[in-house]
Length: 131
Ligand code: HEC
Image (tube, rainbow, N blue to C red; front, side):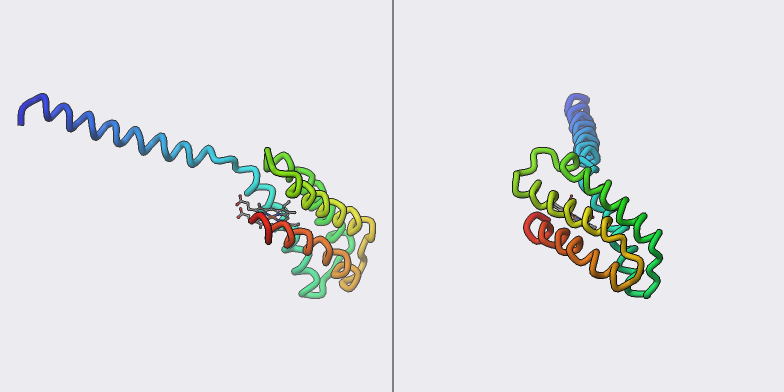
């Protein structure tokens, strides 16, 4: 092998490695907001349904989770820039459901279950269409 072909092979390797690094960086740059917003909402929704399931429905804690859900739901539009109107309508329905749930101020498990039912429905209806 002469020096020139050795150099070409080396060059090829370097270009290959650089390409991999760029591809990995592009993947890492994927907008993390949708995942973040949904994960946070999943956490609070999970805590609420766990409370109902285990029959441990503390009014103050439920209120806290509902308020966090409500404020996080306000970030959906920002997390999905360029989303179509129907998607934003789904997000609006979730916000309405959460507002009602917060206003209901559930103090026992029966009331909490009733309050979060429309919220869960709003999550599900958007997921069925867009997830
Ligand atoms: C307006 C539409 C919409 C609404 C309303 C909505 N979601 Fe989502 N959700 C999505 C989309 C789209 C994805 C997929 C996101 C992705 O792949 O980046 C998703 C994904 C998720 C995930 C998986 C997250 C991940 O990336 O691993 C969870 C958990 C989740 N949603 C929870 C909820 C909960 C809980 C609610 C209701 C309180 C809710 N979502 C309401 C659109 C919605």
